[in-house]
Image (cartoon, rainbow, N blue to C red; front, side, top):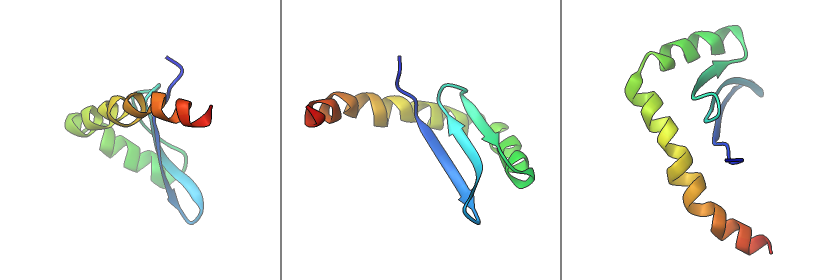
Length: 70
């Protein structure tokens, strides 16, 4: 429940756009990023793929990483 998948996109060293699994969509942080996020959020297949990344990347590796830290 406490795991969040975040995929951030930067332009000129500033975060432009981010996908957050807790929000479930792309969010823009700049004028350009807001436009990009709106376009990406219109694509249902892209959103589905990004939402699946939490399970594919995070949930499948969390136990391994946790054990390595101990």
